[in-house]
Image 1 (cartoon, protein in one colour):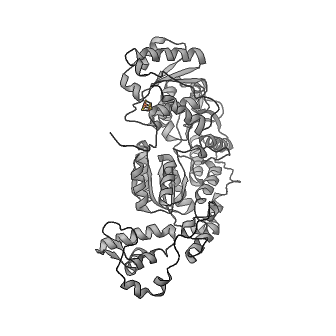
Image 2: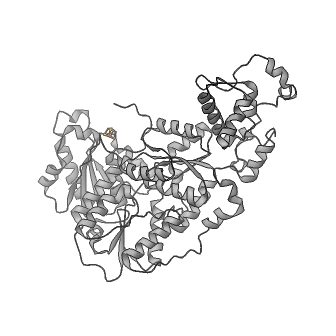
Image 3: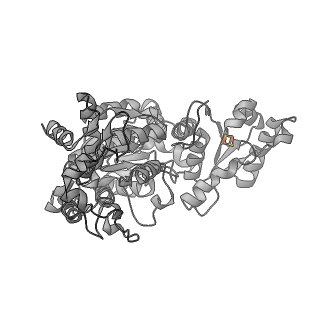
Length: 521
Ligand code: SF4
């Protein structure tokens, strides 16, 4: 048992639902208890789809337990086929049904329907949503795709985009544009928008573009084996990665690289003097492996941030993430426990978090700006406007959305110089974010500043929360507050580490400056 409040991923059958909902003329039957239809809302409310997901539930109740629940599943499969007449179906168990041990494969075979019914193996107690999506897509591709003669023109399939994917809708448009610019035709995009008949045509493409390893890699590997189609390994997120991706496509096809960079603005935006204050800003990244690895490269090499922490919640990507983390000299964090993520963020004291919806909450709690780079996400990250994160327009979008939460350069400077201002002060936050006016919490302390001697004589009371055995003396705490708030967390932590290392219990102004000199070396 594990005490869980937030989960980064749903159970694997939600992954299966994502694949089915992405597709057309395809229906999924889930053997599950009454109430499991809650997952419909992910699609109709978060993604705002205008149709119910093509998913039918057997919806057994307590009273059915004594009877034949297998029969209920059988009837649901039959009724679904008769009512919707899909080109193919898939059948899977939810977590509760996994305990009942009804056999979806045997049941669907016994029905002998005129369409393929693909049984799915989704171990709910050991795997999660991304695995469910990847495995469902693999099983469908395995059942339907066969080796075929190649198209006369150079073509590829785009694999992995699906319902509830972070910006998948617009990434597909952007990547299709990149491919067409090089003279490559897109044969099938799957699962998003594909029918089972489209999956039957996958084999005629010359190669595959794997956009999201989390949800398409197993199918890509299967097609590599059976249809002899190579697949791309570079995810085109960020300018460097997009150029590498086009070079990879060129290598696979023999076509020359052609890139239309006329509307690519991110490199100049990052190079312009207004972005100088972004240099070295400490950033912590967390999300799914693919987005975190890509975002780290952009952060470090294209925007000039310092990566101070990175991690992912999906262990399928652990190895790739570890390799990437080594490149930036940070400890990789592989966990699906948000409390561990919160602890790691607190320890790294970054100035910006790039993460999921959970990290947005952690950022709010710790007072650290955050931008979302990966699922799980709320409704606002399924925007009405065009907002890819891949390709050249994706690079533009990422630049804007990452910089937005930060205090702007001039304000940062003013906050450092005039922190006693009634309007612009630490507690007021970035003024371009609006919000209500916040009065400065405490007035300047003239007595303390005018007569430091008196203060030294008064009994030392720790006024900053003590960290373990270490105490902050009042004058040191006042000095700490002179440090701009966005770097204060780091300064506080470093000073405490320094004090602990030196065996100092009470932090004075001298300790603060000694620590500063020590870390500046
Ligand atoms: S079957 Fe799984 S998803 Fe459905 S209610 Fe039970 S625990 Fe939740």
